[in-house]
Length: 353
Image (cartoon, rainbow, N blue to C red; front, side):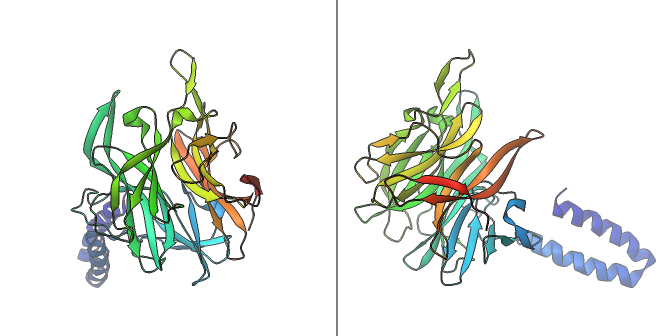
């Protein structure tokens, strides 16, 4: 039951109470009126929780930024809400931090997937996937495809609010795109790296597009980096049981090793196992070519990762665990130690703050 439904039911109950206890009924109705007003203004009535252990939070696609100015960690992900922590162990949230234009292509209540925070040129940028379920852009192989795209919002503070910028769209309206992330390439220019979803092209891709210097829009068109089928480890079986390349590309995130080698972690499926692999650019820039490691780098059913440096300077990987409980995905954030000192990313043991 939604909060609005609860408020409506309470209002009816308090009206009845008002006939018996006039003063009590009037007081309670005033309180309900306040809640109704907040709801009409588009403010979710969230309960802010404190001192919540990381493994007690349900969150897909976790992304963490260590903010040196506030000496605070900020975490977001699918759902678009914000959590904050002083020590990575206990968290406070979730907070609403996004303010969009309800008349934009996103609609008044878009789904938000895989949000990330990036600090760049003294501002905080919110890269996320927005889906407007009311708009259908295509039907392929029986799948109805909704309007979905990666987009960028901005704020002067890590806590937000995060607001739209100049360009109404960053990527083509007739293509479903998702999981956009941020990278400054060797040419010094900013780029968005994102997935073109397999639902439409049937062989998901990871692509790049140049961003304007202030990240307020895109320049030119997207360029292919690699396809899901290029990976040697992501596999599935067709309806006849024959092995073929998996079609899913998910969650790209870029990094450099200690030898300045450019790498990318990204997620797909190895049959029915959700897992993350890594690829390296032979040219040292986004143009590749990209060479994939033969095996995944995370344990089974951990994926959609990102890397961040703690306030003490230690590199960690944030991922979510994946399992199906009563027919629904159950995903929880986890941290792993990583070593970037050599030529390749090495994933170590779980990190327990």
